[in-house]
Amino acid sequence: MKTMKKLSPMIPSTNMGMTKDFLVQSLGFSVVMDTPDYIITTIEGNDLHVVPSLSESPNEVSIYLEVYDVEEAWALYQRSHQKSDKVKPPLLQPYGMREFHVILPYTNCLIFVGQKK
Image (cartoon, rainbow, N blue to C red; front, top):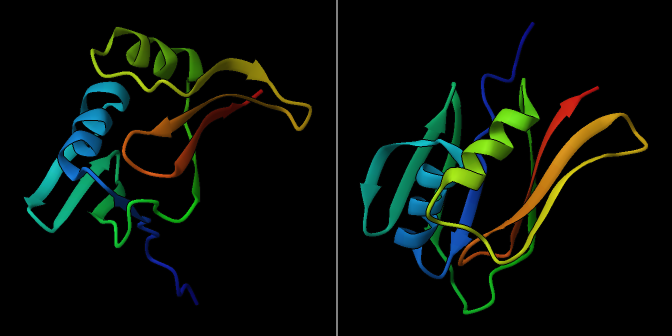
């Protein structure tokens, strides 16, 4: 019997609008809901929720987004106008994933974008 339908991480942000803009412009997400206190973004059936941070230093969070083509995802990020100042370009990891890393702006969330090689 299946019990898990979907996992939707909730990311605390000190500037929800800028975080949303980064997700849309730099990583290709679409906005499903946008209120002053709650934002839901989605990409290919995967949701990422953005909520107000309860402090100026949100807790550390990490998310792994597995993609079909990491080079295509990297090219989308490179073309975007919104960039993170904390990014590591694509590299092949010893555990068999080619991935890039980016800190989501106005959060303390590290996003790994990767593809099995």
